[in-house]
Length: 129
Image: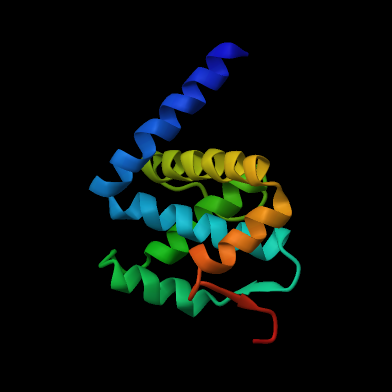
């Protein structure tokens, strides 16, 4: 059990440095958090085109949004939806999942949802908005 916490801590400590070198890691975290907000935060929605626009702003390759979406779906449904992607992308989704889960537990879901309104401005919006 302790080894699991240590490994998670090491991944989380390494993630920010890794994310600076790899904008895709940062983007994966944004997309994962946007979809998590859609599921976990009442009245929140995601507009796919906003995610595509963000990827373009970050100068990520065309098709990145769809690959990330498929990887997240595959990981979070146990392979029932989406498609497994390359190992690097799947690792980025795993780290983003762990970091998001940790933040949700630390802040509590209402606090996490409130924080996402600012953190993900432009990627999430009120349903019907």
